[in-house]
Image 1 (cartoon, rainbow, N blue to C red):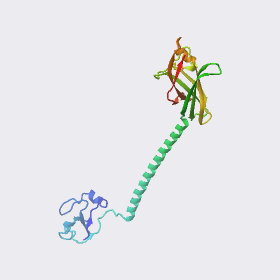
Image 2 (image 1 turned 90 degrees about the vertical axis):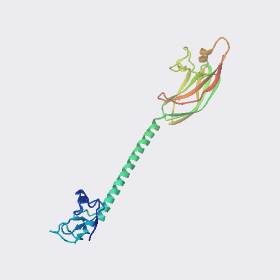
Image 3 (image 1 turned 120 degrees about the horizontal axis):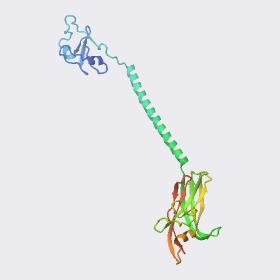
Length: 259
């Protein structure tokens, strides 16, 4: 007697037909042990077949004890087909992996390209040191203060930038320039300041002693009275790029002005 165990993959047709055991009328399911009559191909549950060890439902036309070692129309899954399925799945997984790697590589390429473009477009500056000298007379005979700035600037090859010093009172409030102050000594919003332009000759340029000169008469116009006096003041220094963006600024530096 040949016993066949019902398999979900090999016996799809049998399961789809909801084939029943001819003796018990039970629906044959996955995992059931079945026997197939070699003559009429009737399918029995093993327990039903063992009642007479022969085909007995169709006794008028069939009463044989021979059984088939397979179910008619069952799928024959050979090693070759299993290997083919395995290779197909393996190739599919590899394709997914390579596709994922390609997407990652593409994203990285876009990211680093954007970063490189950003580096090309960005301007950087670093103010290393600021110091000051007072009671200096310039070439035009004006007395005032000199502010010295040591700084580095990058990303501004052949571009024009500005070094600006802005003045504040001792509480860090903006000093408002007098209406009589020249335009070069105040910003658009009348903040008392002094500025000088530069053009960077290299991709990265270092300025060891960049000089700003602020005439004392700009302070006179704000503070001078008939009586002698003294006021504590502050200033900071900023670097402005060719796009009018502030790309570096210093801490506050203190000084006093007296008359």
